[in-house]
Image 1 (cartoon, rainbow, N blue to C red):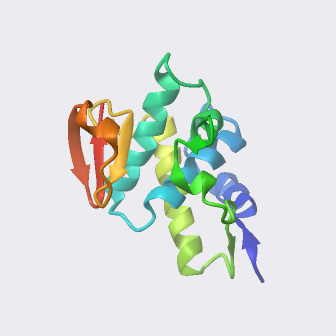
Image 2 (image 1 turned 135 degrees about the vertical axis):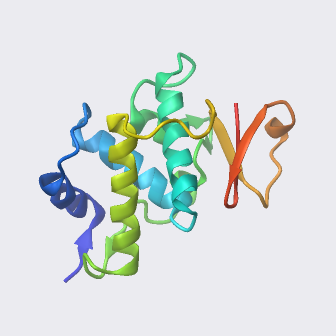
Length: 155
């Protein structure tokens, strides 16, 4: 039996003891971004991706909700590449125990911990990141803060 990511999130939220001051949809947007951007990265890299989104939400230069930050566009360009890649944004897992479902559960756990304030910002205030196989023009004028796995973080 397959299960959608939103349904899996609701199952996780029913069982967690972590208290967050965020609507389930905001938890979903942050979790989905961690999953889509960093599911193959080490845990600290996934935490860093979540922290970039949180830092943007807390910045006056970006939208003030997790969903708006994750879905933000500048013209036809999305802030997070997976959101504009034309592929399915909301995964459907073969079972709630599949490898991808486990990766999504881990992303939810990280999102909840970051939202609850239980994990410090390991990016040193980063608002930007990119994969190490690309070299965006903006990276030349930003301050590199740290690298985790295949991602380089900047503020």
